[in-house]
Image 1: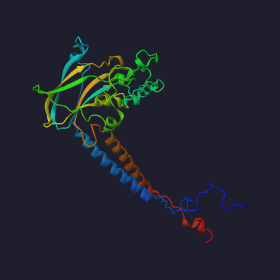
Image 2: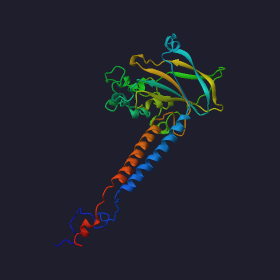
Image 3: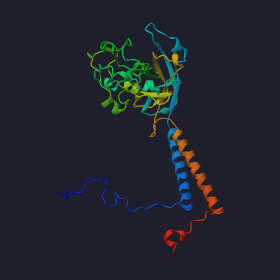
Length: 321
């Protein structure tokens, strides 16, 4: 019995696209367009870099280290916390919004073991009792480290959550008027809406903290790439600019001596590029200068000793003519 159907084949259909027969255009880079491209790119990059630096220079930023101030270091209360004040002088008015950050130095949130020490299901408010699923939280899964009883599971588990920065800051004018600061909106919207939900108050484990939707907690859980980093604490929305000076009242809980760390308060405005950081602008200018110089060198080389172009008569289709 004959079979009229063709046997199955992996051969692509006989079309211009699948057989790679589509018409194509491949530019031949001659000296003139290459020189023009290098010089044009150099000029454009320098202009963009200068614009970026101009923008970041308009950002007003004040940074004060406070862990080495005697009042913050020595004023220990019976509750195990320090309270101290620092004054930030503001010679140039800071127009709202103004951002209050805390900054840590020599804290390696990018350490591999630290970064993975969390359980995302637990942080979404799910009660997790399977120790295999909690393995990433090592070495802080249970209170006794034995992983023998679900009643001893730490909530939250992991190194990141259990090393959360907990200093607090209040801000006042020079006349001791309280300055209202906004907490809502300091964390990423995607984190607030999808990644963090409150843990049930009657859930399994030793619950030390269950308000995972707290934006201070969410900001801390987004780990930093470098050991010197700052994280947003509060936002001042106005209506008046901050002028003259402000007093920051610090409740100092967080110890940094064990890892030779440093703590700072940062008060900053922002531009369309974000905070004060001229690195990207300088990078554009350096790359632009390199491109421009290369273009000029190629231009001089081209006119002093021009490159001899290929002779069309040696191409295959001209060989027999």
